[in-house]
Length: 83
Image (tube, rainbow, N blue to C red):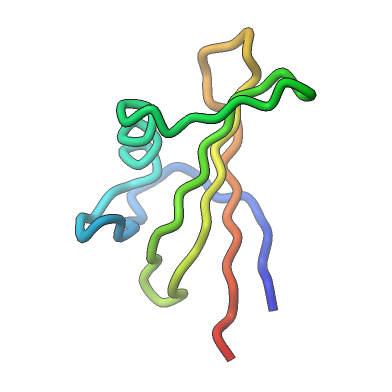
């Protein structure tokens, strides 16, 4: 089973590379490490991060923004149930 939904910025911590980060810290870390990708069809930038979430397990988080803006507008969470 997969869960796809939005997630708010907050104080929730995620484990990534043996460190604990919030969503904002994960996004800034990936931007510094040149982890952004560009979609020419939609004229947007996006970041994919695979990390661990307490109580859920491994999740994939997407951040996206349009090319003409500086603000990252969307963060989506995809969680996979381990059966």
